[in-house]
Image 1 (cartoon, rainbow, N blue to C red):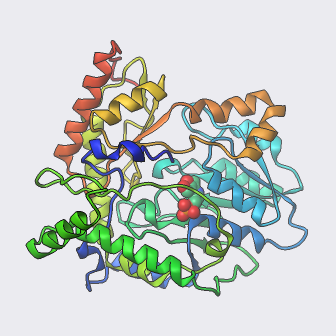
Image 2 (tube, rainbow, N blue to C red; image 1 turned 180 degrees about the horizontal axis):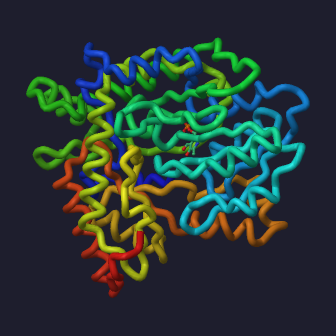
Length: 409
Ligand SMILES: Cc1ncc(COP(=O)(O)O)c(C=O)c1O
C-alpha cells in the first residue's frame, strides 16, 4: 500500500480510521463479542500470520503448492513461502474477477490450497471455485483481509470457504490483529501460543494513545496535544480545520516479521475491536460509498470498479482503475483527496513465475499499475466524501479527461 507519507501535511482528511476514545469504551459491541468468542477463530497478530498458521497446519501429503491471485499484496504470498509451500498464480480479469478457466488449468494433485481474495470487501463469486477445489481436494481459503464484516445483517463474513482470513485493522483502528476461522477442515489449526514482544506492545499502545489524543475534542486533551506538538518542535501535521479528524500516523508498510506473525492478537487490539460499534462502521462506510458513487464521474482515464454496492458488502475503500496513475494520483492527493493504493508492488515470486508466462504476468501487472482506492471510512462524513468526489471530478476535468456515460458498473 503506497503511503504518500511525505506529502501527508497537505491533506486534512485521513485515509484510514484512527483510534478515538469511544473505541475503547466499556460497552461491548454484540457483533464483536460474538466474533471474539468464536471457538473456530484463531486470533493472530496479523493477517499474514493467520495465512501462515493455516497453511503450516495442512497435513503431510496435502501437496506443496498454493494457488494465489496474480493481483495481490505481497503479504498474501510471503506467508505461503514461510509455511514451506510454493506459491503458484492464477489470472485475474481487468474487472478483478477470477479467470476461472485459468484457475482450472492450474489445479493439480500438488495444489494443497487455493486462496481467493474478496477485493475491497466485495465477495468473489465462489461457487465454481468451490466445486473445482472439492474435485481437486484443495482447501479453499477465503481471504477476507480487506473487510471482515458483511452487512444486512451486520456480521463477520468468511463463511463460504474451508477457512477464512481476517485483518481487523483495515476497518477498525486496532493497529494490529488478524485471524483465521476454520469452517470445514478435518485437522486442527492451533492458536498462537506466544505474545508479541513487550517493546512492540509499548510502541503500539503509544501510537494508539497518540491517535486518541489527536482525535479528542476535549479542551484539556487538546491542551495536552498542543504541549506535545510544541515539545516535538511541530514535526507532525499542522492543526486541522474545525471538525476534521487528523492523524499523521497513516503510513503502512508490509514487512514479514516472523516473531510477530507467530504471535497472538494483543489484548489492546482485542479491546479496541470489542469496544467498536461494528454496526456503525458498516453503516457509515456504506453511506460514504454510496455518496461517492453518486458524485464521482467515470472518465476516459478513471473507471469505478464497483459502482453498485451490493447490500451485503461492507467496503474497505472505493476502488477505481486510473490510467496515468503516477501523475494523476499525485494531483488528486495534492488537491486533498484521501487515497491509497493496494497491490502496487507484487511479490518477487510472482515476478519470477510470471516472467515465464507473459499473459499471467500482464494480468497482475495491468491492475497493479492502475488501481487506486478512495477512502470512505467511518470517520469521514457523506458530506466530506461528496466534496472529495467533486474534487476528483474537477482535477480530472482540468487535465482534459472527459466524463463517460454512466452505464458502466
Ligand atoms: C488480501 C490480503 N490478505 C492478507 C493481508 C495481510 O494482512 P495483515 O496486514 O494484517 O498482515 C493483506 C494485507 O494487506 C491483504 O491485502
